[in-house]
Image (tube, rainbow, N blue to C red; front, side, top):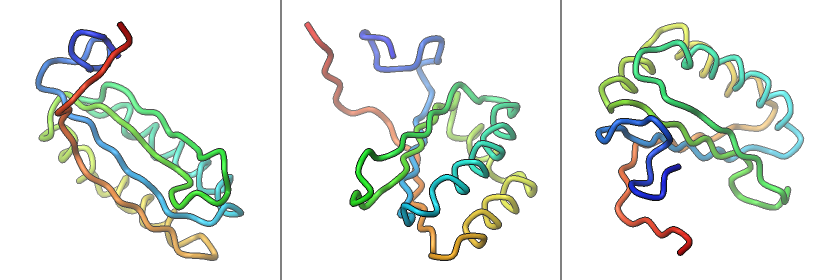
Length: 118
């Protein structure tokens, strides 16, 4: 991130941030992360992809065990990438392959406030 504008290095001013928080049982994490990485590789090759990071909670008691933060050149680029039938199929399979339900909470966000160290 740059201190000046809160965007990933090299990200254009019109970029958007995609955040998806997952409610998932702690015992399902490792298998789900493996499948997530496969899907993320599909996204990496899509036009408009900038970067992506998957964060894992340190506590198994956390409601959201995984948080995905990705940056895209535009909302249109993100929408086109997620409309890919192969990606949609893999995402559905990943949720259905777990013993307990996985609840994703996806949305696209714009930065409205940013604080940086002085």
